[in-house]
Structures are given as structure tokens and as C-alpha cells.
Length: 324
Image 1: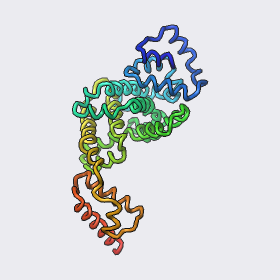
Image 2: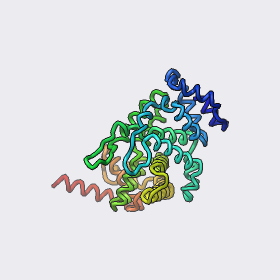
Image 3: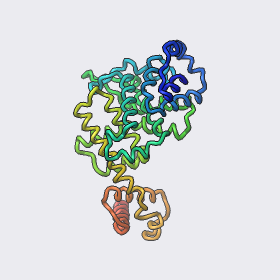
């Protein structure tokens, strides 16, 4: 591990006899403490040209020794959308992700500055780590229907569960584990939104709810989604190109529309619910305030008076339902 980490940090190549010895004894890595493995892998992932060394680790069998579930991806062939098996797809997704992280301006011309500000060293490492493990669950969830079409239903959940066990073994912090789990568990969500857009069922409110659910993890999830998509084929087909354009537009909306609005003071607070409507504090406060915020974020209401009118109407509808 240290050989590849030093190679990545200093732009060295691994001497052939050293690489051969590493390959011979790769499986002994499990004797090392999880904390030591984590430190070496994180330092490696933190470099700008880590793919070169990650791929060498894969060739030496060391990558699978560190992440044993990766071995099951070899020979796990996918559906017609994918040119590669799940293992090759994972490595190519990693390469695309690292390329984007190094030069976000080549793909995100209008949002490259906020993306650079967002990508501190820790996030960069964790996003790379997540994409290495994002498809671990595919061999466990692979099915073939009566038309011989391959499916991986629920693979994101299974992948997240397997990644959690690995992260626990490597002694990642709770915050690191939560971030990685969120990215892997939700990595298909941008694709679901894209499918809804193609079916003309995606609404502004649906996009807003996605941004609210993902919060500060949104840019990481979108970066992951583009790299994942680019790794399906040698060259993006028309569908992938349209999807990439969709994700770029989502990134723009997040930084230039959603984020400025979410950081503004709320139109009303719980105090208003008490003084204006005589409500007593209850769990419904959160529901009402969240709904008001959602209406504001989707430009349905824009002022305090409109927010109060919305709440009044909401409460009247509720009382009508109760009386009926």
C-alpha cells in the first residue's frame, strides 16, 4: 500500500521486482490494522493521478485484497447499456471521476468555480472512495428476466450495506461513513430524475425535493452520476450525452437557484404560527414550515404575507377534511 501511495505522491513508478513481491503477498494485507490501510488509501486517493496506481493495485491483486467484494465484480456482465463487466466499469468510472475532479471547467464551464470551492480535499477523497465501491452489490442482485434482459434491482442498497462493513473495518469516522453511504445508496437518484424528465413527469417541485434531501451532498452525487454514466461505453451515446447535459443543468440550478434561496431567512417561523394562528408547538410545525419553504423554493410564494396566506389556506383545508 505504501509503495503505491509514495508512487502517487512523488510520481514514481513501482520497480518490477517490488511489484511482483507485492502481488505475491497481497493477501497478507488483512493482517494490517484497518487504520493503517485507511491512512494509506486515503493519501493515495488524495493525489491527482491516483487512477494510474489504483489500476496497478488492481493488476497486482492488492485492490481486491483491500476490498475483497470487488473480486465478485470480475466477470459480472451487465445489460446492453454497458460495454464492460462491473469491475472494468468501476475502474473506468473512477478514471472519469478523477478527470472531472481535476479539471471541472472542461465539463462545467458555468459552475466550475463553485464546484472548486465545494471540493475540499476530504470530499475529493471520499467521492473517489465511494465510486470504487458503488456497484459492490451487483453480483448479489443480478437477475435475468424471461426476455434475457439483465437487472440489478436494489443493487444500490446492497452496495451501500457492503461498503458500510468495509468502512467499519477500515475505521472510518461516522461522518465519513455517513457521506459514503449516502452517495452509494442514492447514486441512481439522478438517473431516476432523468427518466422522469424524459417521461415529462419531472416537476420543479420534484427537483427541489431532491435538492432538499441531498443538501450539501448534491454536487458530489451529481459528479458521481456523470462519471458513472461516462463509464458505460467507450464513447457516450446519445442517451448518455443527454443525461450529462441534464446533470449539468441540475448542477447549475443547485448552485445558482436553490442554494441562494435556501440560505435566505425563512419567510415565517414557528413564532408566527403561534402568534398569527394560535397554534401550539407540535410536530406539525415542522411539516408546515417545510411546506412553506418548498413553496418558496419553487417560486409559488415570495413574501411573508403570501406565506401567511398559504398557511391560512392550509389550515382551512385541514379543518375542512376533519369536519367532513
